[in-house]
Image 1 (tube, rainbow, N blue to C red):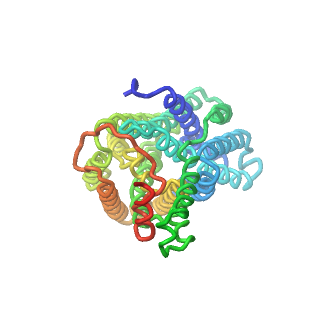
Image 2: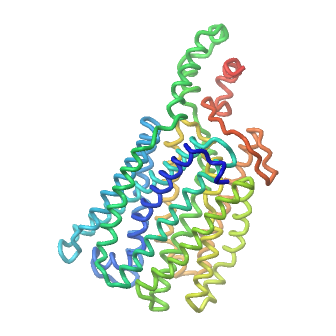
Image 3: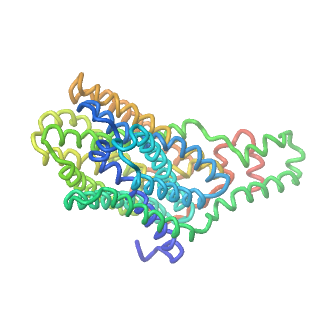
Length: 472
C-alpha cells in the first residue's frame, strides 16, 4: 500500500498524522494524570464524589467540543480546512502551557478549579478540530479509493499513539517521582512545533473549487434557454445548488456511528480505572501502566482497521465488528460480575477497545454523504453534540444504574445505543446503493472519488432537469 502513495500525499499524511500524534499526546496527558491532578486542583471530597469529579473533568473536554463544533464548522466551511487545523493546534499549545504553570487549589483556591475546567473545555475544542479537520482534509485530498479509506483511518492510529506516549511519559513521571509539570511543559513545546509544521499545509483544492464551481453552474444555467423557459425562481435555484438541504436522516445516521465510542471509552478508561483503585488498591502509577496496555491494544485495533479497509469494503467491516461487539456487550455484565483479578479486567477492557464501533472504519463514506459546502458544519456539530450528550449522561447515570441494578444496569444504555447504531449503518448502506455501489461485495476495487459539488440526490425536487442539462 505504501508504494502507491504519491509524494504529495506523503507530505500531507506526514503533516497531519504527526500533528494528530502531538495534539493527542497533550490531550491525553490530563486524562491519564487525572488521579493526581484532581487532588491538586479540586477540594478534598469522599470516594463517591471523587468518582463523579473524575467523570466531570473527563467529559468537560468533550462538552467543550460542542462549542468547537459550531466554531470550527463555521470556519471550515467559510474560511477553509487549513485554518481549522492550524487554530486547533494553537489552542492546544495555549492550554498545555496554562496547565503547566497553573497554581494548585491550596495556593489560589477555587480559581484553580475554574481555570482547569476552562482548559479542559479548550482542549476539547482543539481535539475536535484536530481529529475531524484532519480526517476531512485527507478525505478531500486523497481521491483514490481504497487508498482514501486507509489514509483517513491512519489518523486514528496516530491519535491513539499520542495517547500511548502520554501514558508512557506519565509512567516515567511517577516512577522517577519527577515534577508532574514537566509533562505539560513538554506537551507545550511539541504543540508549538506542531503549530509551526501545520502552517506548511496548503488549502484543500476541493474546498477552493466548490463555491467557484457552484457559481459557474448558476451562471450557465441562467444563460440557458431551459432556465428562461422554466418557472423556477432564482432564489430556489441558488439554494438548491450552493446551499442544498441535508436530510436529517443522514445526520442522525452519522450520530449513531459516533455514539458507541463515547459510552465504552468512558467505561473502559474512567470506570475501570476506579475499579483498579478501589478494589485492588492500585496506585496512580499502576493504573497508568495498566491503561498503557489497554492503549496499545486500542492502537493495534486501529492498525488492523487501516489495513483491512484497504482490502475490504468498510461498511461491511463496520457491520461485522458491530455484530461481534454487540454479542460481547450482552455478556459484559456477567464478565464484570465474575472477574477477580486485574488481568481478567484487562482482558475485558482489551476486547472492548479492540472491537469498539468506530467511525475510523468508513469515515470517508460517512463524510461523502454531506454536501462539501456544509460538511464541516454538519459533521463537526453532529460529532460534538452527540458525543457530549452521551458523555454527560453516561458519566452520571451509568454509575447510578450500576449501583441500583448491578452491572446489568449497563443494558439500559447499551441496548438502545447499539440498536441505534445498527439502524445508522443500514442507512449508509442504502445511501451507497443509491450511488450505484455494490454493497454486497467484500473486496474493494480501485476507483476515483470525485467530489460532486451538486450532490444531486439532495435536490431532485427543484433542479433535477437543470442538473441533467448542465452535466450532459
